Length: 460
Image (tube, rainbow, N blue to C red; front, side, top):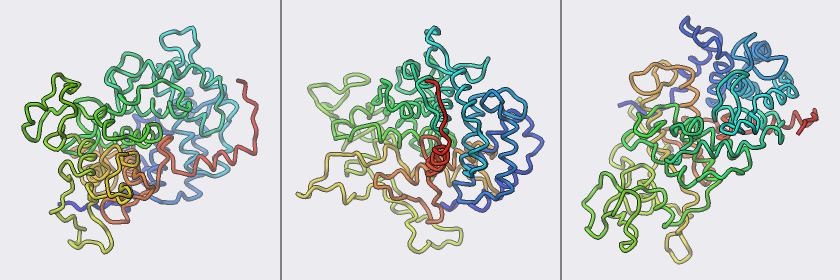
């Protein structure tokens, strides 16, 4: 069996080769050059690989050729500015993190570009949304990209944010997730964009966070441990970030949960692990009978990772860790001091009250199974000669490498106590990503410190 080891050196070699030389097949990504820069640079930064001066200078020069005189970045030199490539370019430049990178961005023109992409109140159905380009589509990606760029460059204004929350609310679906536009199906990438936009707006929208959380937690596949993008779809490595990155944001938005709150997130069991007592049977598809009270989770539950995580933590359900199975290195020996498989059901010393009873609050418990997600990424999404992929049988690419590594970083840094929780050897640990923007922690603060010395008049 393959060991739970991050193939760091192989990934770095793959990424360094890609930043300089791309295969002929990449010509289809001619309009995605800022994205290629971002995917590769962010992946390298997560792996802790320093960016050399020559590489950084070359990327800055390329992205400067993609910058429009009227604001924003196109997908390549001379191409029209687009919100997606603008987000990628700005993220890449903040990842480089030098004064030359920060100074290369025309913030004044950028603010004008963001405002131009905003739809006016007269467009009632899509009011508050953003066009991806001057003649482009309107969807939730534009909202996130515009707000994220405004945040990174410290140019957020009322002209950018006014009315956006209403568009955001209209994109939430009956399932609880968020679609690309009002009336569209809930989707992992769009839900991340919506939740991040909600945070960037200061929590000013009226999203139903309980329904959203319930939808999100059920997207983690029980057998695989990875995330799927939509209901009843296959898991995909990239959703390790697009779905996994939602939970650290939700953890800051949701109040601490008590035992009764868990019923809001746990659906009725579809495949009971044992036959439930007759008086515990659900009467319909969504609510337990009022006369019967809460279902007996000790006897059965819905077998989803979320429910199992909580129940195992509190001793009601089976521990999903392979306690009888040792994960070993390639040389067959466990690394000294490394805990190869974290025990999901282990007792939390901080969860005990003075009288010895378990606390009823769950605020510090992750809303997803981080160990299962890490195992999926390490065992199923890595390619031996470098790079990461959607799933076994698929080819590696820079997009999946970026978001698989980003999701792995999220999973490793998801514990409520702020300490990394690493599956496998300690050297698997990645740098921590800022889940709101998906750039390394500290990059945003460094950019804001630089721009604080260059005050800019912004028309509200």
